[in-house]
Length: 261
Image (cartoon, rainbow, N blue to C red; front, side, top):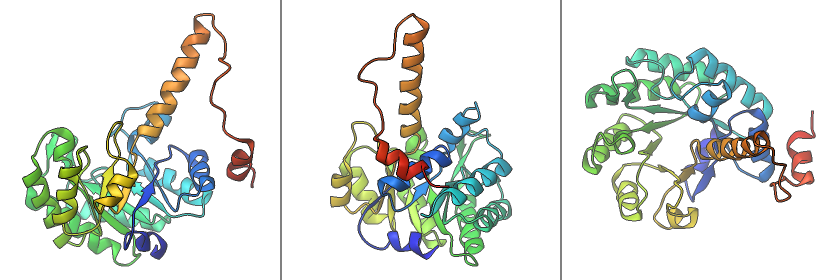
């Protein structure tokens, strides 16, 4: 737990999001200091859309990832699989028990397709932070208003500040792609900030320069891999062949990632 927490103290690190244990080992072999689940990517491995995985399925998934790698594993726990603070706390404890080093909790209610009331959202983060004390699991509080177009920057900042006061260790408002907005979030959120990388958005170096502590990729790796597979499959279905320039991972990387027992 302390290793993952220490990563948030200084500098900037990239937190890749593997779909499964095999990808987690691949990222570890590439040299990433930690990995994190992706809710959409994991759901895709089950043939489902995002926000359709159960808490028990997520806990088993995290158990598998923790067993597969030696680096810390953080968890995208969506809305904590509960509306009430007690339910969120139970999810945090369940993930900590199987070895998760971090957990993120969103203020988005998938049933209502809206944000939780600001006071309830704060209480949910407070419950998560209290539940995390025994294990030391890092709590990331996410405000989804910018991502879903449900809130502006001012409201989002207010929520992040409330989450920081409620005990969140890291703050996260996915959605912004412009550096001025990101820099404002970093300056006023009240704690270390995670930013979701976007195609065409700022580079890791640019995010480092404005003080972003953590950069994650969400489901982009999963989306890219699916697109490559679908394109190749469509080519074969239409009578074509496997292209000469099909990307292939280096043999030494595969040996490092998957060659051990």
